[in-house]
Image (tube, rainbow, N blue to C red; front, side, top):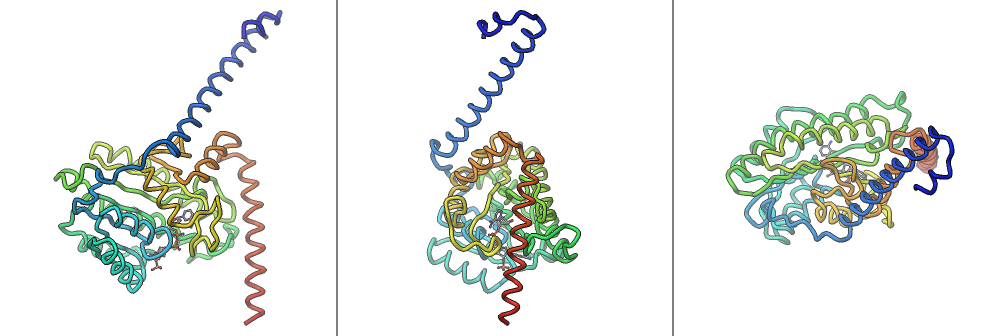
Length: 340
Ligand SMILES: NC(=O)c1ccc[n+]([C@@H]2O[C@H](COP(=O)([O-])OP(=O)(O)OC[C@H]3O[C@@H](n4cnc5c(N)ncnc54)[C@H](OP(=O)(O)O)[C@@H]3O)[C@@H](O)[C@H]2O)c1
């Protein structure tokens, strides 16, 4: 650096180049440290021990959207870790058959609560309250969510779809949290569990403003701020609160059946979430947030450290991608209609 500066005659230019080199060195150091922390989280640290969240101690986990996809995997893998499970979703029969499977396979207790989360009815929260009454609940997984049926311009989004997304992803998720967290705090207070845990499913759709999925994108971005704020509030009660960020996973919602390196199955995805609870992985710059699946983590880290999530470049790429998905989805729907 001194040799570069000694070749420059003008003092103001010397100051400018010197300052740029210092800023560049600082940026390079922080970026390198952040990347090393990501690798450390993903590949070197051992799996988190769920004993601190009450596994094998008679504690319970409540999971929303538990009858299918990612939620069903949360239920299976938490039961395998020795937590009793309260399963919540819309369809009673699917919940009951999963409950039977969990009890037989993992020797845990289960309860089921069926309601439609697109309806913000007091009866939902009363039903949850009744189900968990007297139980040492230590874990809440806010997994239930809805997206658009296909990418759609915001101004053409049907009122029902718009209302359902905001009601399920935000309003009802917040009210379920209000119904369950006092019990989690009490489980920690009474030492049924050393710590409590509230995990909420975020999305790349919320990480990056996503044209043509505007309502879903906004609803998941809302969860980022809400969940982070709650993390601060519940820290002193020893309840860990974390937003989990994910790119695509095979499921009914994503309409993707075949997994790939960047699109894991729910089983692989949930294993990476539970292994890394409390670690940021790809979300190095975000408090109480984790992007735990390795390829998603690298994608998140790279976007954040290059173009940035709020950049025009990211927005334009996302717009073009979702426009073309919409065109393909409309063509497919037209073909299917012709066949009928
Ligand atoms: N899959 C992805 O690519 C992806 C990516 C990022 C984030 N996520 C997030 O991950 C979460 C789970 O997604 P998923 O892909 O696993 O979805 P999924 O396979 O479609 O499963 C959705 C679950 O939620 C329940 N559910 C749906 N609508 C409901 C309603 N109105 N009331 C009550 N329960 C309802 C379903 O129950 P019933 O079967 O009884 O209706 C089912 O158990 C969502 O929050 C989603 O935003 C998913």
